[in-house]
Length: 85
Image (cartoon, rainbow, N blue to C red; front, side):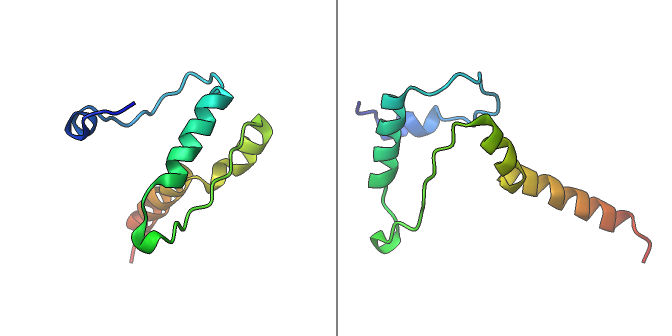
């Protein structure tokens, strides 16, 4: 599947809502292969990918997500701003 790069960039969007349906294994395999082939500086490929499908494990990992960290940072900043100096 080859897509015009300009079209791809102009039509991209951030998905904030998910339907909760599992991703088919063959789709996941294709995505992981694309990630594996993605370029990186000096081709050092610093990423490590773990696929988690178990709901309980996802819940345990949730506090470590970027969204959770942003939320904690925002609360910390808000609390600091409200504290008299």
